[in-house]
Length: 113
Image (cartoon, rainbow, N blue to C red; front, top):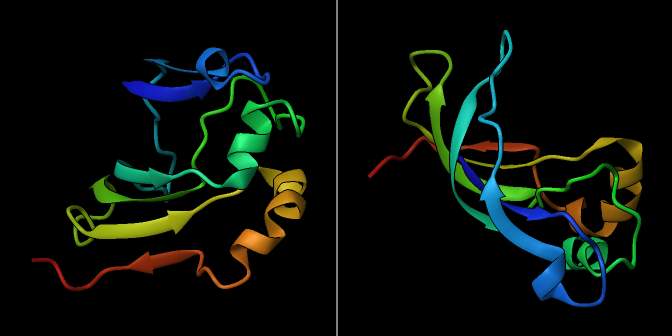
């Protein structure tokens, strides 16, 4: 699959961020696989890309808030639209605290047009 990746953090975003192939995710037991249709980039993503904050790992796929559809998981959930956010451990939790105060961990959308 294609992903937006921060490979080379630095002041020039054109060199810090690129689109390239990344491994397909494999859900584990009890997980769901979500086909992301849109992901938001926040100030933290830009700070990591521009080397203002240390990356939690390398490479970084930015966008910790996303929406999409479940494509693998419990049969009664496949096809559902979801909104989510995720964090990469305590470092990201500390860096993103202002972003996540009002965001629920997972919002299941029960209305599907």
